[in-house]
Length: 209
Image (cartoon, rainbow, N blue to C red):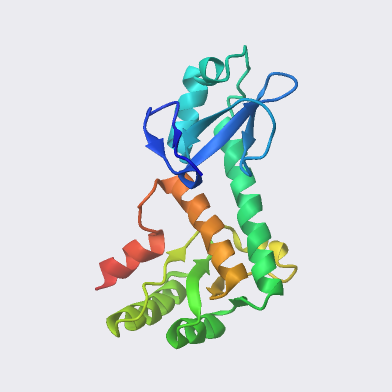
């Protein structure tokens, strides 16, 4: 797909790095994460800061060529949609056998090279996070892949998404469904923190060195 231009920065980028918006039937601005809604669309760099900026200045009106209204909580709405997308992809990975929970299983998945990402609930204790950081660093030290770690969800939300009990630590495993889940997890992380930013877990791992 051809590059699109952000209405805030005026910089062109790959569609995966931007979020499409359209005017709804009631002339409200509607996020189109799947990029399949009809009508004229405009694009904003996929970060909360840029979406908030576009909403605050109502740059959508000019871009969509319509007297659209912007919900002041548009940035929060996009966040919720990205959370839903990520959790849905995690559920698919779980059903495909490409998602495990529990510190011991996560440690084994990381050290065996099966894991492509690690998730920690907001409530995860520093000691538990540190142990999995050590496993990730050990793999990297042995010239293995860099396995990112994320803190994006409360334990209850993550557990509810996979139809189980509360989840503190989890690992996404390699495979088509697992890779799809990681893509959506990264999209949520970058929306909140900005592209190219390190996860909290990665920063903690560096601090421990």
